Length: 395
Image (cartoon, rainbow, N blue to C red; front, side, top):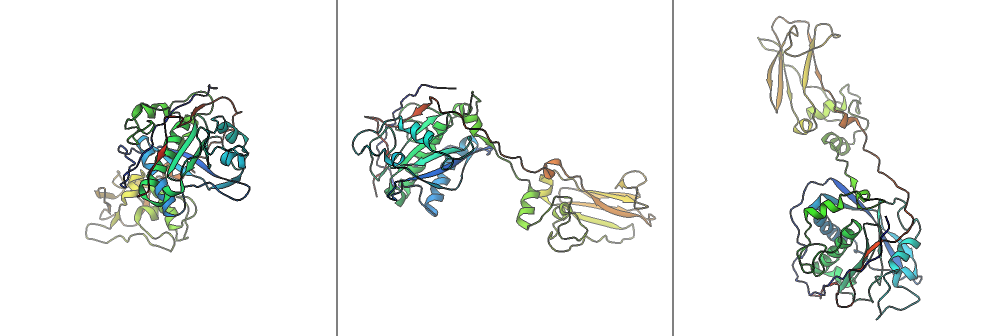
C-alpha cells in the first residue's frame, strides 16, 4: 500500500523531573516480539552519533522501552549494533542544518539508500538509524532526543542528546522517544496533544490503549505492523531445564547413558548429566510399593505420570487396571504411589510417560520476507515550528 507523506507535530520542550517519567499501564502476557536493527551513523571523519550508551545505561533504556510495549503484549528485541559511515545520513551534509530545518524527505533517502548491511536483510526487522540531525528538525541540543519515523512502514531516524544518558530522567526521555517512534512503524499515528498516551504530542505518560493494540495487530496490505510482529516461541519447562542442565538430544534420548530417558530424569528430578537410578520400590506385607515424586514443572508441560505392570516384560497394563496385579495407592499433584498386590510375584513395574508434541517439536523458524520497493509512506515527523521536542534539563 502506498501513502501520501503527511506531517505531524510533537509539542514537548520539557524540563523533566528527576524521578522516572515513563508511566505505563499494567503489562499483559507477551505474545509477540518486534526486532530492531540499531544502526549507528558516522561521518567520514569518524564522528559517531550517540546511541543508548553501553552497559547499565543501554540496559535501562531498553528495559523502559519494553515496559511501554509490554502493555500490549509485545517485546522489543535488539540485534547487534552496526556502524554506517555516511555524511548525508549523519547530518544532511553537505548542507548545514544547524539552524534551518532538515527536509522531512531525507528520511526516505536515508532509509532507502542504505544497503544490506547496514540494514537488516529481513524486511520485518525494523531499522533504526541513530543520527546527529533528524529529518524534519534543525539541529537540537545535547539535552534533547527527537525522531522521525514512517507510519506502518519500516524505518526510524533518531537523535540522542549525549547529556541525556548521564541521569535517569534523561534516559527516560530517550526511552520514551524510542518507544514513540517504534509506535509509528507499528502503525500508530499521533493522538490528541497533551494526553496520557505514548503517541500524544506533549504527552504526559506512555500508556497504550486497547484500540491502539487492535491497530497494531490488524493486517493491512503489504509489509506493515502485522508482519513486523513475530510470534514468541515460548520454551517449555522441559526445554528450559534441558538448556540450563546442558542436556543434548530430545526428551526420548539419554544424555548421560544411564538407561533413563531425559524426560524421565526431568519428571523425577534426577541429575541428567551423571548416571542416576530410579527410586527404589519398598517391600511391605501387602506388596511391593513404588513411590514417584512429581515435578510441578513437568505437570505444567502436560506430562502425565503413569506406572505400568507386566508379568512377562512384554505385555504391559496400566497400574490399577484389571488383571494388572497392581493398585494405585495415591495419585496427587505431588506423588504417584503404586503397589504390586500380594501374590503378584514375578511381576515387573515401569514408569511410562507420553511426551506431548510441543516438547518434541523444534522452535518455529523466523519468517523472512523480501524487501518492498520504496514507495510513498506515511511519515511521523514529530516536530516542526511551534511543536518542539522531547528534552530534559540537567539536574
